[in-house]
Length: 232
Image (tube, rainbow, N blue to C red; front, side, top):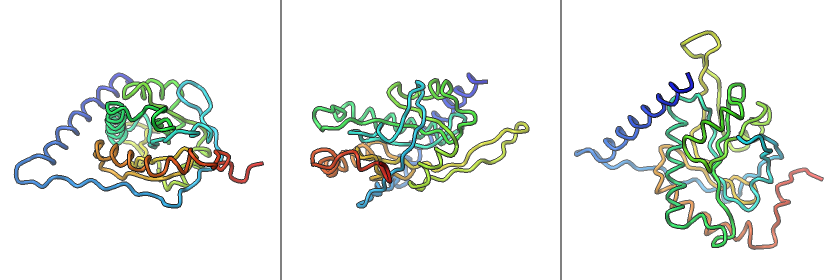
């Protein structure tokens, strides 16, 4: 069943790419316009949280320290939105790699991509590790309790809900937001990218956002302790 799931993902991805190319370049049609990034001039801080990554290690608010983070919420059994979104994020990541834009020494910060499961009932650590590895070995997959996932999703406006499936009793899908969220190196929501996504545009807008806001996060006297909302 697991093999079939990834075969299906591959078929959907190829179909989606071909359809997308037709929409963009077919004679007589206009080029698609992709929505620009929404930038939060007053960034949204995230609460304290602890989740688990695909290697069984803790992932918490300190995992954002001195990193720009692309965050995407989804689940491994997702038939379409998640595979396409992760392929787009892989293209964004590769675009940054190709131009040397992930060199921490040059920018004072690192960059990471995090996939957050909204289906902890089925998305075990092992499932996440296998799934995320099909897209990019450097991506991070995280899961945890439903309460903890909801606690970090809610401040960022991420919506998701379970809907019944059609194959058997207990089968279900999850409708969920498909935006890419950009977390700054102080653990605050700084920008979001609504679908559909143009990876080159996302990468270029990220460069602009990083250039404008990294100094505020990392090259001043502001410290990462800002993230400890209501902490000791």
